[in-house]
Length: 613
Image (cartoon, rainbow, N blue to C red; front, side, top):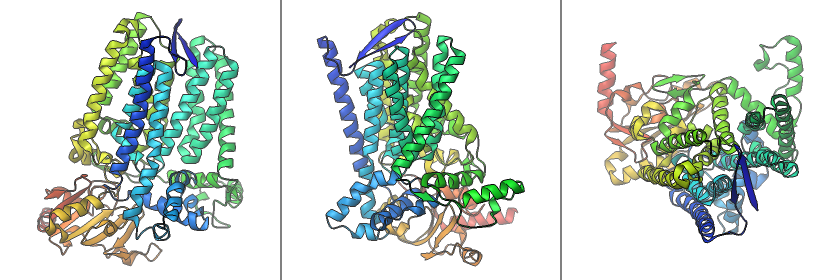
């Protein structure tokens, strides 16, 4: 299947499945294919090994419990009421749940909380397939653009990226969405290329594939609602090179509308036409009070009618987004977030090796433009336009900044663009310089990732000061997503004196399930979940129960431990844990998400603070 790329008046041919025409081409093809396969197996293998190193992250508990309930009863309304789609967790967990039943581990399904420490790693290993799939898709896309060696490079860059690796081993939305996003952007690129070559029929087939993958992506996470217009807009900018401004604009509008129609139809097919009434109440709706009376009646009637399941969940999610949420950046907490949040997150959460590769790729593009040997092709434009467009929308539109994971779906496009370093180019020594730079960058990336294993979720680059410095920059899923219970239990096993402990933990899984010993206070994004092992009433009369939460300086144990999303992040009562930020920890969990202090030192800091006030 030969594919030619036309840009700047020069044609560069890349053969993916055609018979090689020389020994050198055969060698490149075999090396590229072997590198992609090896990268996929390595990525899944790393997920397999790392799956049981941390406890449940914040969202995993809800998704595991929902999947178990659905597997037994067929009920999946609860997750929609939370504002989440109903497809991604089914894709991730159906096979392992079936295997649990088959091998007689039905108790892992019937009692997920009691067996979470044993069952969750296997669910994560099954989900690791999506990381391998992302590596394969990214590798094949890069191959189509820049040749087989670039394909192998892109696949390895995918599995060696700490943020992709970290989320590839969790049963959350990020990994399935990233894989689906790779398909969306790749097929859209193929459609634009086919049209550029005058192959109208092939372009239509590729746009059909884009439409199907957009619908799948939306069914995995509602972020993909942006994709039809993101792809159409980037395609319009690319086609402006032809000088057909008005015609390109009409094509972009038609593509956007067509992709939206496909998104709706595919989602209805995947959800089986299931419906849900967005509002549980009839009559007055407090959330609509700001609307004029006629609009309030109309919208009130509408939200009391059945909607397609995921669209009802989307409406609930938009309501949550409208209200904002506590976010943390550079030591400050806000309820509406920051426009610069994701850009700063990229600065400190991406390995410096990736920044070096991006800089080298930008310089390569400038050299090619200056030499006018290939010009700036659609391959050079489409992928970075997708990345920049997505980042712009996320920065301007989000009011809830919870982590860099929200920008991971465009990672394949960024990696494919970087892989263009390895494309043969006359002013760059026929690709030798690019391959040398790519190999050096990939080696540095592997070193950075190895330095953070087995805890890639808490990776921060050296510019940020590593994990300890990262606590000042970011929190939540960037650093402490409730995953530190198992590492804390390992600390207690190595240092038994730390069992005399009061733990203020962030998350929605009881740390005792993962072996933590001590007095445990569990706080999640909705408030207090457990106080010393007792469930907290979240109803209207919950105030008295909430008063039972002690301040850390009043702990009766020798040591007190606090999750960083409480002490340095946006969660927990305002100011409740400020005192521990003045105290030097005597120990830190191996993943860096929980800091341990001597209670006496915390009391002295609190007393000094009181005296100074």
